[in-house]
Amino acid sequence: MVQIQTKIFGTKNESVIRDVLGDISNEYIFDGNSVFRRIKAPTCNSCGAQMAHNGFNTYSKKNFGSIRIGKYKCQNCQSNQEESKSFWLNSLSQIKDFFTSFALTCRNQNVSYEGIAEISEFLIPHGKDYFADLCGDSLSKIDIPLMEIKGKMPILRLCRIPHFF
Image (cartoon, rainbow, N blue to C red; front, side):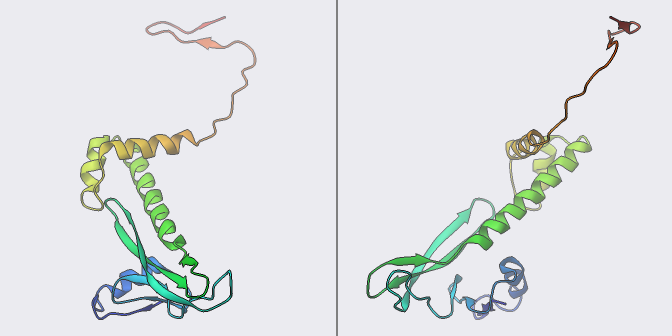
């Protein structure tokens, strides 16, 4: 499990950070400056020398949050390397999956997109267009098999008895 320095965060937020970082190995740390990095810098892929910690890059998602990912620099060949941000991308994917499921369930109950957007204000605020796009994208991925019709096909007309041709 990742080591978390709680000087700034306090123990109150430690469990939330642990949930987000998941089952990442013990060689990583989430330090007091909110930077996710390895405790011991990796070796250079080019020359094999030990790299040095060299700041961080910040990645953010509107209305969700941001993360600082540690980066390293080799003192010999001057090459740069950055930690994997896969856990961040997985978290964003899980949030999107949650909101897709939430929006489809609401639409199934005849809640308007405006209503879904108002409810989402209690969680992570998004507009009605966001939910309309999520539902549209999700529904467009459904593969509906073609029906094979044998025999006569009924033609339905409003206020009339069905006719067969």
